[in-house]
Image (cartoon, rainbow, N blue to C red):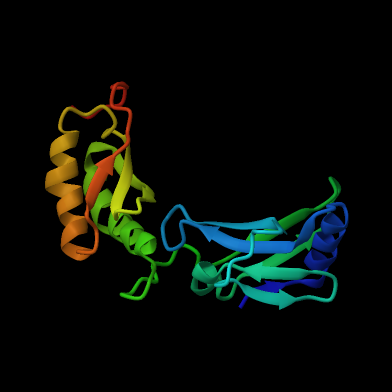
Length: 191
């Protein structure tokens, strides 16, 4: 689980005391299991807590850990060090970028796993990448292309013949993919 040092607890409690409507803090990881994973601590306000969150009461505040992020937060450390400029809160989550995906993982995590571990390495040869923006209610993965893929004349072929085919083979519950990239910017395009 996450270790929050005493100095970090004191610092977070001090920050929370200045917030009128904060219930505590919420710890989560954006894009867990991917190279872009980012560990975050935010004020937790009324309506932020979801049933999957794990609540932990510290001496001076309460923290909620996002359920989806829990496997990636294993062995994480939150620390605070005072320095000449005041101090710095640091979060070290060594497992944040480690792919931990199985058939029970959320669909978003499984899509990101396929994109970052299978699709993007192939696109990188042309300086491109693709990322998941959202999953629609009708189970379409909405994607955004970047780098050499943005504005590339072969992007439709890449989307249908490469990305969609790969995702649909591995995640048959998807209805398909949609591209939301603005391809009018051709400044970085591969073709």
